[in-house]
Each structure stands twice: as C-alpha cells, then as structure tokens.
Image (cartoon, rainbow, N blue to C red; front, side, top):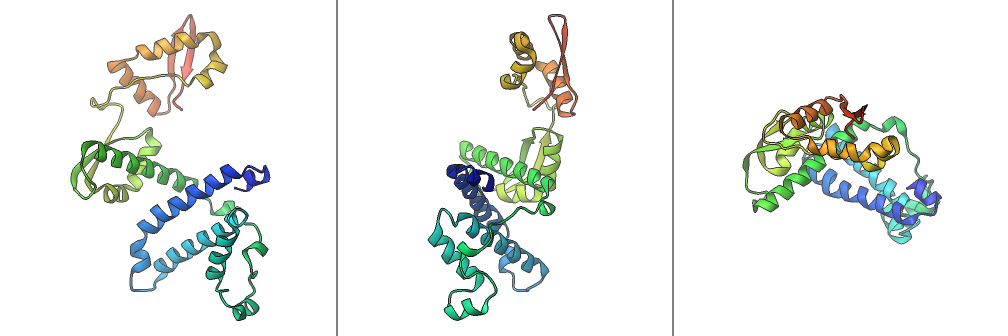
Length: 245
C-alpha cells in the first residue's frame, strides 16, 4: 500500500487492503473462533486477540486516507478513546489522522508460512469448486480427496496444514498424487513471454516439441520438472533446457 500510494495509485492500494481484510475476516477470524471463545484466558487466547488487535489497528491507519471517518471510529474504539476524558489520559494520538503511518517490520515476516498458507487456500478453493460441480455440499462428509500439488514444496506446505484442509472441506483423508500417478494426463506449453526473449526463432519448434510429449514420456518429464531438474530438448541441432515456472 505504501508503494502504491507514494505513486498516487489509489486503486491497487485499495485492492490490496480489500484482499487482506477479506482473508483476515473469512480465514483468520473464522479459523480461530475456538481460540477467541474458549473460557480460559491463557497465552493462546491472548495471542489470538493480540494478533487481531494489531491487524485491525494497522488497517485503520492504512485506510485512513481513503475512508477517514470509518477509520477514525474504529481507531477510537480500539484505543479506548470513545470519551473526551480518555483522550486526555491516553498517550496515544487522539486521532488516527495524527498517528504515524505503519512501517513494515521484516523481522516478523515468515515467507514459508505465507507460501504454505497460500497453497492451502488454493487447495480449499479448488476443493469447494469440485464439490459444487459435483453437487456435493460441504456439510456432506467424504471419504477421501485426491490432490495434485504443483511441486514438492507445495505438497510439503499442504501436508503441514492437512488437518485444516480436511476440516475446511469435510474430508476424512487426503491422498497426494505425483507425476507417477496414472490418473493424471500431462500437457506442456511454454510461457511465451519468457521463452520468446530467450529462444526467439526456436519458439515454434519448442512449442511443437512440448505439445508432442504424451503418455509415459510426459509423465517422466513432469516427474523431472517436479524434482527441479530441467527438461532437455534437442531442437534444430541445439539443446535447450526448460524449467517449470
């Protein structure tokens, strides 16, 4: 948001905060209801509330330029500044518009957690879509779910949050498919934006060679790419190395 607003690009900034608030409300708050509502006030419950409080307070500062009055009301409620007497006693700025703009603390970033959670959210979204297409509502439990991740890292992330995945989709077991699974048919196509710059006139031949990969050859190529190895192709006397995105 900071980068966008410094360039006077309001729309990307607004979309970013909209996306964050949607995930905060429909994922974090919903998934942590047990922590919020449990009777004992232990460290786990306090951590859940502290995280939510930090998020909401930061959001009020971020939306202040675009929604000044809503941001002000939320800020004053969060800071306990609803009454004039509280204003005089509190060391916090009495208005969100007097507060400092939030700064990113890179020490708090956990990129692996972000990647694993994004993989989980994609799997949940695809699982819900599959249920909808099959006419099976989420409240109907299913025995198992077959899942095909994009790569080894994504599979590891999904295994990390498998309990959440099963709970979200009401599935009793998750089975992971890899490139050796006969249930999957593979098709390959190049990212023209990338290969066009690198291979130029060889792109049509590359596209045709990838299109011709089928059956066991396609499965072997997919297995190699999953493992991070390049796919080697001989085109017009030149060997090319192709990697998965």
